[in-house]
Image (cartoon, rainbow over all chains, first blue to last red; front, side):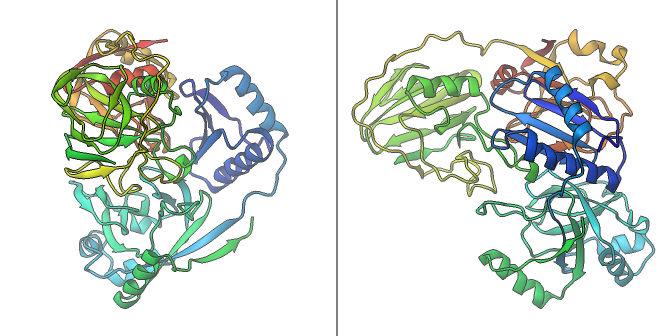
Length: 245
Length: 279
């Protein structure tokens, strides 16, 4: 490995931050995830360490005791220099259904005006791209998705809503995503995804992992109703495709 | 069972928190003032992760439906058991039908009620800490119940604890956050010389600070945040993330509070003063 020069900095006494160049790039994300996998399989006790990947960083957290920063920093640099390209965790493309009706897409018409694009062109463009999951955070199961086509970039709403529905699919700047639960929010809402992004009753509560890809496809109200029930009772079958490493 | 006759402002069940799901966006949650809560579990010979009730600003009235032992501590409230006044950090025997009542808040902001063997609210992702919508409840409503195992005989090794109260402490010990070095030291001068007060927005997710410092134009990619992370917004506002805080954020992480400093801050309310000190 050793492709990038890493910046390693202390983050309180219980955490350490490893940072890659300040860019949104899939190559960087891949390098981070490979190093993450190497650390988990060869170096760190995964029962004790939590590792949070996001965009250009890995944060390692050890709750039980303070970290010896200098010692760990040197070890990490050494591990990074010897880490060979190992088989990383498998990555998937998740196909997620979205109902883009005006009932759910409450900002659909406004966004279509702003972008000077018909609603159907907007939906076509939003569903024809694969988005990369660069991070999961902010709320349980919230994905930071990258790869939005430039033509869909629209400023977030001037005044955030106090309540955005669970499943709402939004656009804001260079980002698109799904609100995994009801929350306040300033994104432009263009549809709703009936599939729960987070299920606290499951051992693995969020099926998506950082590095996976997501593609939306349009569904009608009738299918939306069906998928909602399937998701609620836990029999919804995810459409996923294994991606080449 | 413990019956909640009156719920108080924001009364929840908390343990040490939910570990292992930060990479799925799940906050740690758990005792805001872990210093006080841990002392109470120790006093009752409980598992350090035993769940306690966290009381915020105005406390509940509670009826015990089985014998047990309790102790409470943290913020100072006038607390009575069947109208008889009790004190913080002391073990009391409880009999079926006893009524514990939180009165006026005297000092601090959060009090913890620990019970022998802990409260048995359901575990979600390995923790009993309430965090809605992971757990079905965000905080107690009137006439709610929470389970505990009865205990009719227990000899506490120590029945009382005189701990130095830190409720009056205002100095928050911090270390430099990951983005600290990106700032011009001149812009941060005021950070360690002036006092700051708690703004109106403060809860289990975050404490906002009233006084602004110099703003900035530092742009960074979203990255992990922790309880105790002090973020600086472009307009110069300081936001201190707490136990239910978001797991990632895009603002520079200027400082990181020590564990003890998080407990000290958890006892502060609107208008209270704090200052930062590098350790």
